[in-house]
Length: 270
Image (cartoon, rainbow, N blue to C red):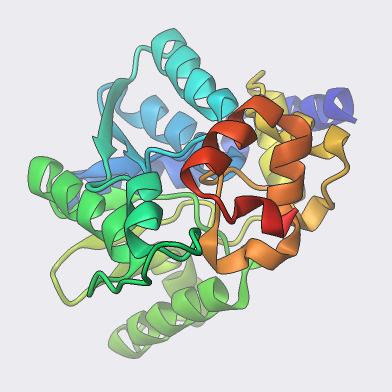
């Protein structure tokens, strides 16, 4: 299947995504900024697109401090192979420390409230630091297909752009401004592959001879359902009942034991 995807992508060639390179160039010229890279397939495509426009574009990894070893190795190896301007911005405090502090994983520890959401600590604050360092612009691999909330986000911002550009057709506005998210704080994020399907993502990677994060293959071989396979932090405290802790124990028993010693209730979700 990968070979067929590669053949299909190579037949179309760079012309099939030339318009994205032009938009990326325009975004960087107007807003400067960075590419957010998680090591997942989608953000890896965006990093590869962006580096074709500017080989020195800042590429930033927001590190929760609780990542699979496959992801960390993938980021290190590919950033070196591509000679990326790569930077890691760690969450403070890191995710494991935060979960210990909250007390919910230990019957003998009191539950605490930090007064701040996990998303603020793990994503928003590191992103704010990246913007401080590199400018108000950013790019990411977020796609509408991934979740209804993401589809609504893009639709909302495209509707605003359409209203502001009434002299243009909807198709022209979509081509020029689709995938752009403008925030009240002045930051502007562009998702070049916002309307791609998963098939297009894997086809692009195959056509460019880019191996996906090996975490995908390992999770699939463990039997994780396809819709649950994603590159993320090892523990998602908001989805403990979806079975991912059991897959962690099965695939990374030593790592699971280390985490269980710090989070005594972790085995309850296996």
